Length: 147
Image 1 (cartoon, rainbow, N blue to C red):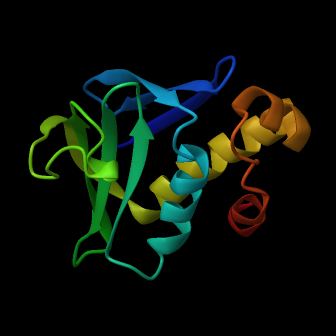
Image 2: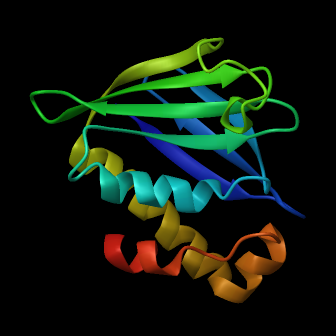
């Protein structure tokens, strides 16, 4: 099981509520990385790839949602916490703490991502999204692919 709830805050900040059925973790997301687009791309890419990750930058530190497709076509996932920005090579990628893990299905993951994109698009549209998020545009192409 995997539940995702991506919530836009003000001035380039968002929150991701991520749950595995046993617990839910809230993580802060900075505009420094285009996490919503990265999440949408991961759902698209997992159709053909066996592994991908989504980066959720904080200031400092970052979470990585690492997703691996197994032989049954299920998705094994791990939410990793890095005390600095490993994605910017400021920390060794092997120095992380696992905050959550679990297994979900590919359709469930794609639907969770799709649900969040639709919710954000319907609530804000592309212009208000850009105003709230600042640095990055709403991932409209990925949204259309997943919708």
